[in-house]
Image: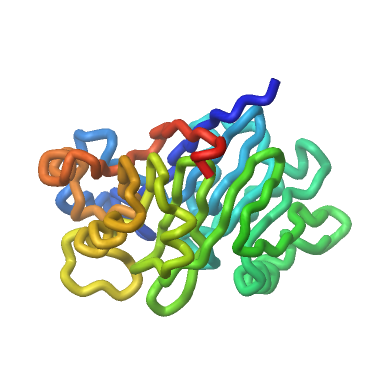
Length: 266
């Protein structure tokens, strides 16, 4: 019998440079706190033995092995920035295992850029290298893939746009500075919201949100719990736990968050 409960695995919750940054730069983060070790932003959504990945950044190989994920049913891309897509070549390993192309889903603009930059992933480049992925355009409405229901929505990322997603009672909003009324409507009432906190304590924001903006949006989204992702190395895990409101917590790599689907859960 199909169950309407799954979970999100936070594969990575770091910013585009990760923590530590190259040169073992930990910034304000305590290197003795394991939850400060942050890889590039990505999550896995799992339900009834099916797995959807959101974004394949430069650390995708390590993240997948760390969580022992041996099969994926598709990849959703939020946008085409390198910290979210640079590991796309790793999809070849999943193709090699199944001899089936991995479905890749996003908006048309992102898919066009991926096909241009990584043409060898979508088209057979030689006798030895077959196409490992196939592209599918997403629309901003409720849909189902591999038995997992979700709703994409467009987000303002300052100089560009990204996709956010709602899965049941869980929302994901990385790489954004604000949300329009439609996105807020999609997210309204989620139990858990994983949201961009890269510029958490910065007054001016250009491509990533800060605490003031998150709290403004929360008044409308009304999430029970907020988790912060895309965290920089100036944001120490334990310090955030001490200073933030109790309903806002920093995420950490490997964290699992339960998701419920149902009449009142998206």
